[in-house]
Image (cartoon, helix red, strand yellow):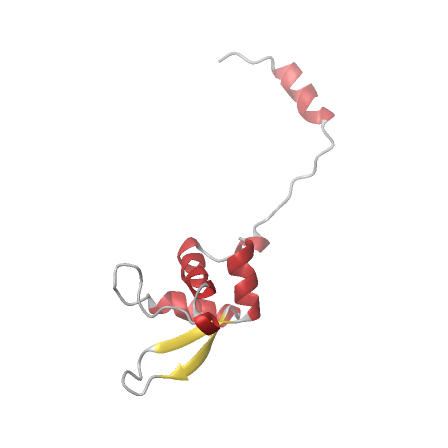
Length: 101
């Protein structure tokens, strides 16, 4: 592909655009797996988050812990039959994140 470099440079300089560095925003946004996890709580009573994924496997503990640390989820209650299971529900911030993105 042949490009007239002078023309391209002139056209690039003619736009008064500043670049947006959105690297800082990536820490505030959920990853796809976290987003899917949070969205499943939107349709549940009380915002209960699932213990199992759609394939019937345990939800990855890393996803749950990340959502807890970001304030998107909070522990709901302890399960006396399975104390190692983390039963969580959406926080208001979690609802906003799951609904907005």
